[in-house]
Length: 65
Length: 199
Image 1: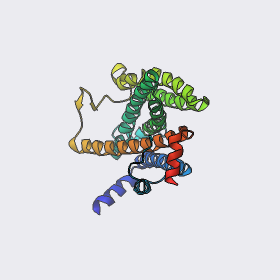
Image 2: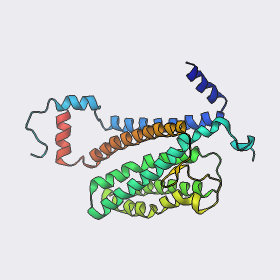
Image 3: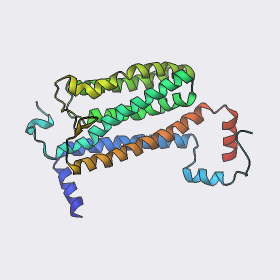
Image 4: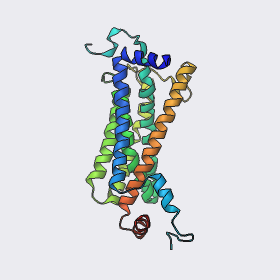
């Protein structure tokens, strides 16, 4: 717990560092969110849904046929 | 220099920790461009659609890492490394704009591949800029042939952040390339069968 409070105190005393870290991670989060949004727009399934879907495919059926 | 974070002196206390984002974002931006240029070359030479799609996928992530590297690089100065990094950002933006401007995807792929390959010249310039010119930017602390000029605890921080950035870049690239493949191949029979199966 003291480790976390040390980090919080260090960030509170370094506004430039806090701002730079916050903006960098916010941008990365925005990119991930925008890609997720694109996925949803396209009607993509989640990985778990996709795995579940493939279990219903009849054995022997192929995309190449 | 009013407003400059270094105005309290060159010893910046905890602010040095910004390097755990800045250095890695800059190295990711260069590496992603090299991978993108390699895909451009493969796409151009072998006329491979997937390679062109991968190049298109990598460009936004590379541009973002370049922007983060510039943003975390403190105040703007016409330093050799910052300037060459800014040129890299323009190359990424140019790549994306060119792709968006040409309607036919295959023509856009070829035009962007040429731009991507020409822009690869900038990568060694960025990497070697601190050795070629005497600038504000410090010399390499971690690199090929230069050894490791930092303590073990800092090195571990770098390693952890490297894994984090790589995980982000790989995950975003794979998801985005899937979106691009499905968008481009929407008219093909396999995509229609895939949609039927999912429904």
